[in-house]
Image (cartoon, rainbow over all chains, first blue to last red):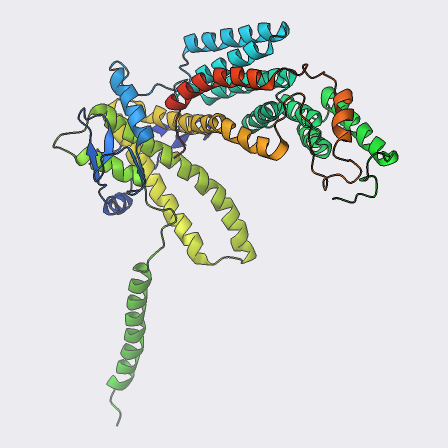
Length: 248
Length: 233
């Protein structure tokens, strides 16, 4: 089953430094082979996709199998017979990058002319293109593109007034790129506009941990502090929930 | 009187007993079961099953895809093992866990190394020189999947946020949680926040119309991207 392995100088992962592969241990190989249990699967008519044997489905909860990603990759490889194997990660589809960039620039232009809805549509298109990138390309491209596009979309939603969508997009940007201050900034602005000032302050403080010298965020923080302090100082007369803090 | 053989027998019995005991003990510890650290390696089983299929034989594309999935699972295990090893070492030093878990981890590490060598060899059997690239590809694919999942979750998160924060459209009044901040009342923060916020909200547009337009605009590209993008495994 396994051809005699050749010990060579290899890199096992991008992050791991050069390591010499250890000589194959026949005992361990025997252990692996003994561990094998055949899987109950069948092939579809074109022999390109695997299905569960009992129900002939790609994703079957009863048999607890999920071949969707396997089959997707297999179909991609079968559709491009010139592609012998997934290429190394630095081979990037330049055309797709251009398209994404172009769509993003169109969205930016619309944003500048205050056409919020069209800008949102463009940004959504650009995000869709970015997710269609081949999965074996280096991850920072998809990540970069998505974070900029989503951040701009969050700004467009905010200007348009859909604050919850702006908040959601900002949170996604934070998940994609935690240290980036723009994501935290947009989240804080959305929360402030929604009226949830303590949460906004938390968000700003969390963002400032990553970038303590960011001027915009410090400005937002000061605004929030001002507002909160003004509530503490002046209990509004029309409001029973003043500084006493009796929640209904 | 006492024959010379008595001390000889004595020595033989003592050392013979020790020797036998040592042999049986070593045999029993060698056969002692080590609990596997990881659950079953489904991708490996799938790959080997596909390899062994002869009637009809699986296509090359499918085999390569199965090998890539196997490499991805291996990369996940490598990362997990690396994190766990450090943490387990600390716990072991403090005495919070027993030796069994540590032995399981060491055995899993050895098996993983052998597995990586095997995957490397299999990759080279398909395309010369692929083994070197395969693991890079696998780690990039893993990261890309994570990114894709984040983007796919956005509509779900939006629904959850809407439930939590209210619609957030212009013209609607918000009700921030009263318990969160004692001094703020239900309507006052909204009005002062609206005047305080640096960028003005857009004038109240007919919410149904704009919502319909933007959500339609999102729906079609999102459906397209949802079909193409990977689902969470």
